[in-house]
Length: 331
Image (spheres, rainbow, N blue to C red):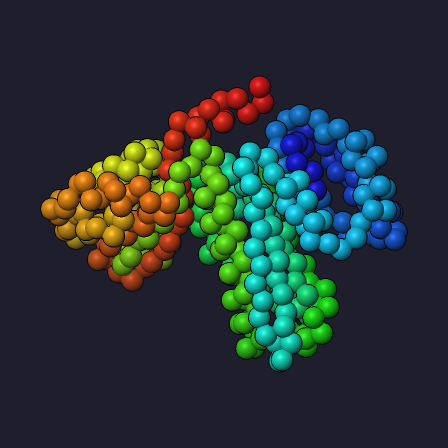
C-alpha cells in the first residue's frame, strides 16, 4: 500500500508499476503467488508512480517486520493523506467460549461519498471464518457504515476495504449464518462504524459531525436518497458551519432529491429541537438552537410521514478550511 500517489490515469506504465511492486512483495514474502498480494494506492491522480522507490524498500521492510502494537500504529499513520490523525478501532466477540478479536484502520478525509469514496480500510481478525462468510458479513456492514458517510459529495478513483482472517483465536470456524456469525458481524459493524465516523469527524476543515436521519419515507431507497441530498447540500453544510438553524435549507434539499412526498406533512428536528411542523415553521428559541448546534455532534431528523423507509447518513459541516486545503493540494 502506498500513500501520496493514486497511480490512476497513468496508463500502461501504472499497471506495470502495480504488477512490479506486487511481484517483488510476493518474492520477498516466502515466494508467495503474486495473486496473493493486494495492492492499494491513494493520493494525487495522474502522476507517474515512482515504483522503484517501493521496490527498493520492500526487502528491508520484510526483513525488519515483527508483531508489535507500534507497527500497527506506524501503518495507520503511513496510509494518511490529508488526514490529520490516524484512524483505528477494535472489537471482540465470543465464539463457543473463545474470544475472537477484530482490529482495523482506515484513511480518508476528503473526496468522501459512497461508494466508499477515497477510503482505504484494512480489517483483520483472529476468528476462523470461511471466505464466503467473510464476504457475507462485510458487504452489508460496509453498506451501513462506509457507504453511509459523505464529506463533500465527491467520489474517488481509488477505494478498497479488505477483511482478512487467520483463525489464530482457536475458535471453531464460522461457515454458516448461525449465532457465531451474527456475533462476529455485530463486532465487525462496531469496528467499521467507528472508522466511518472517524473519517467524517476528520473531514477536511470539519468542525462537527452531522447525523442526517430520514424517517417514514416512501421506501428505504428514497430515504437514503433524500438523506444524501441533504448531507451534500453546500447551503445546509455552510449553515451548519455557522450553527445557523436554517431549517428551510434542509426542507429545500429534501424537495429536490427526486422523491415524491407531501411537504406539508414533513416535521424537522434540529439538534433535538423541533423547528418545522407540517412543512411550516414551528416556534423555537433561535438562541438556544444556535448553542445546541455548536456541539461536536449534531443530529437532524426529517420525518416525511409518507411510508416506512428509513436511512441514516453521516456528514460534516463545510468551512473555509475545506477550500484552503483543496485549493493547494498539489502546490
